[in-house]
Each structure stands twice: as C-alpha cells, then as structure tokens.
Image (cartoon, rainbow over all chains, first blue to last red; front, side):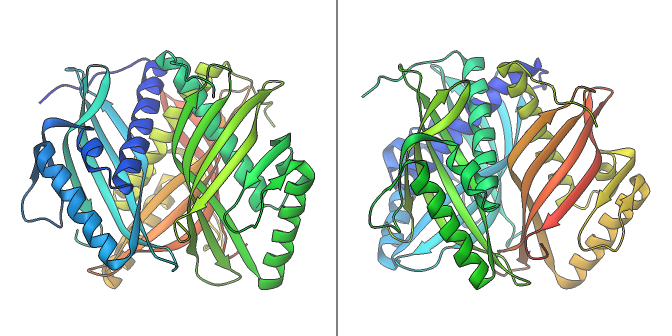
Length: 147
Length: 147
Length: 147
C-alpha cells in the first residue's frame, strides 16, 4: 500500500480544489445520463463497488451500461436524480495517486413533484492522474440505510 | 462569447475558495432577508432568471423587491428558508469574468416543525470583479421539479 | 476581540481547504461515535453551546460524554446520523485564530428505512492551531426549527 505524502499547505489547496471540481463535473454528467463521457472519467480498467449490486462494475463498458440502465429506469418512473458530494477528505499518496473519502447525497425529484433525499452514502475513491486529468481507478460506495 | 482561460493550479484554488466564500455570504444574507445588502452582491444592471417568475428580475431595485416579497410571504406562513450551494464549477474567462455552475438546495423549516428539502436547483452565474469584490452580473436558476 | 486579518488570496485558499478537511474529519468521527478522538479535535477547555441543551458542554470530558450518550440513544432507536457541513466562511484573526461560520445539516437514517434531513443548523466556531493542528476552542450551534 502506498505511503501517504505530506504536502505544503498551498499545494494541498490546489489539489483539494481540483478534486472538488472533478466531482462536480463527474456527478453532473452522471445526472445528465451522459454514459460515455461519465465512463471516460474512470480509468479503462476501473472497478466500482456499489452496495445495491451483487458484484462490482468493471471497466468503462460496464460503467456506461450501468448509466444507460439507470436512465431507462428513471425515464419509466419519471424520476430525476441529483448527486451531491461533500465532506471531502483528500489524502495524497507517495505514488502520486489520491485516496479520497466523501459523503454523497442522492436527491430524487418526481416529475412535477416534491424533491426528497433518497440515499445518504459514503464514497471512497482512488484517483490517478492520466495525461493531466484525474480519473477514478477504484470506487467503493456504502449506503447509510444498508450499513 | 469570451474564451476560457487556463489557470495555474494554485491560482485556480484561490479563485475557487473566493467564489465558495462569496456564495456562503450571498446566501446567508438572502436567508436573513437583508434585501439591500443582498442586492448589493449583484451588479447595478444584473439580470436574474428564475423558473418561478414569468420574466427576469432586473437591476438592484428589482432584486431587493423580490427579497422583501419573499420575507413577507415567509413571515405569513411561518417558514424559514436555508439556501445551500455545492457541486461548484468555476470557469475563468479571458475577459476576467467567471462562469460558474453549481447545485443549489433550498431547505424549508416551519416554525417548530420538521425541516425538509424544498427545491433542488442548478444555478449558473456570470461573476465580475468590481473594486476587488465579486458581483453576480447574470444568474439563471433551473429547478429539477420543473425541468 | 481580535481584529480581522486580510490574507493574500492563495494563503486564504490554503486555510479554507484546511478548514474544510478539518470539518470533514471531525464530523466523520462524530458519526462513527469515536468519542475520545472527537473530543480530541477540541481544545482541552473548549466550550460547546447547543440549543438542545440547558447549558454548554465543557472540556473534553464533557464532550466525550455527550457523544457516548448520543451513541446509546441511536443504538436504542436504531438510527444513524450523518452530519454535513457547507456554506463555509472563514475569517482569520490577527491573533492567528479563525472565526468560522457554516451551515450544518444532520441526516437521519433508520435501520433499513428512508433517509431524511433531521436538522438544518448554523455553526459558529473559534478555531486555534495547536502543534500544527486546528482545534475547536468554542462552538455555538443554532437550529432553524428553534430559531
């Protein structure tokens, strides 16, 4: 396991802002069901563990399929999801990767109806930088209602 | 349309923190119904597009009026609103302005009652710096329940 | 009262990121009922004012006791709490301390049930740096439903 790396305070702030912006982008295109672009924010061989699935999602093809299935389901039911990230911790590793931990809220809004919180989650990522851009290499999500 | 400007990572972090703080301040005085001060966080000729209104709000006078009407309505009903910004993206433009996009939650708490989420929104701003302070020149809000 | 100190923009961003990370950590160990570690994120003689208590909590012993009582209550009822901080303002003081103000959400999830927002709060802290780490010296929380 990679050792943790201690950064100077302004370097840490730079990373912290980059990661916040990365998640804002990644969640926005998820909520817009932009399956291919969303899968492209993961590494080619990413692994995504979700508590609602029997096994992990693997690689970009599996990730994109998952988003398209979610879109079809939401269209049928007439629901709109909105993901929200916060309470972010970022731990830079000696190998240049980042271990992140954050809370994630999922809000649901039925067409013409009242919004409500659907899930309260914890999300743990390994991020790697590929050609100047952060990509999720590994993600594990746990949900408060299933914990 | 202004071209986007690429910043060095620590410069971006500085802007990102400034904008987060700007919104924390702007939403706090909105929730406190401080109509004049809130309108003062916009430019003189700001335009504010809200999905619940038939036309855009214009200039500081229009903005302050909108807050006073909201205060009167909340007093009558006995509700308290609490605005929450997150999932922020900031795109610096070549002309020095910032294009921002964020998610906005509105929580409502009836007097002595239970809080709940009222609206889940997306907010897109153009921010300009006037005498060292960020001001909103244009704002467009869309609501998940009306989208 | 200490005078406010104006920081250069990148210095401010560094502090702002540190404080965000501090709260992510402090709230995570609170939700995990890690009473001793949580109390350790306060100064020895910290004072914590909560609207639901008749008087302030004092010092680390009082803080840890409060968390253990909360854990026992949540175990009995089968509830899980999740604290969420946002809308952060940080005001560096001339004496090196920080005055912070933020919004705090508390989500509750019954075992196997649906999550919902429990409280919408405002949290005001005085943070001091002790051996390189931020510690809460004073905290005052107000709740929208009791305001």
